[in-house]
Image 1 (tube, rainbow over the protein chains, first blue to last red):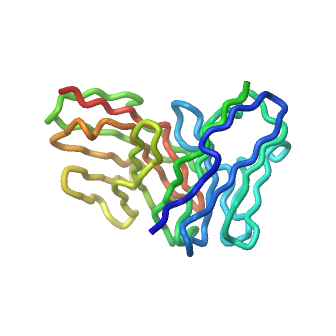
Image 2 (cartoon, rainbow over the protein chains, first blue to last red):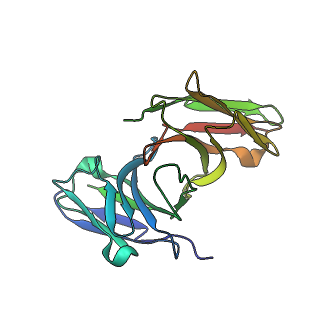
Image 3 (cartoon, helix red, strand yellow):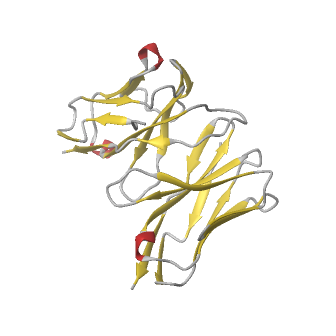
Length: 117
Length: 110
């Protein structure tokens, strides 16, 4: 089966510019996650969607980050304006189910590496 | 919220020896504990997981143990091979959120 698709793979921008990342989860997966992985650290959850509803966005810097999952399939993560500390790999993941006792494996995409100069 | 601590941050072992990575978690309600392997420049991939109703799980050369009372769990890799070199992340799921540890860079020396 096709995996989680992300684009672009690499993006270099200057601070205060904007950037958008796109994710297409595995077909049929209801739950979609965006994680931020700073070099040398573990992935940090930014936002979790269940279908097209937000389950958790407690660690999303809402003054500059936004995300949407229209129609419960593809998702876009936007950063505007970018700061130097936003340099990281943005990982999208999906799972067939999520939440509560319905634990399930997360399938990650290859990630989008952002460099902010 | 959940907090996961992982140790050590780096680990170097001789090929054929065993490697152990340990994690502690804070939320006693956490019920799912996966381990992911991430090779350089690649995506994290699940290698083994354990649920809170089980104390140990094995899959060939890898095993995970869980101590719910102490709130810690460990990854054990036996007979290590060069292809085991990677960064390993533990994680714990409390409520609906999966929280990752900081990662352990494992190097297998020939």
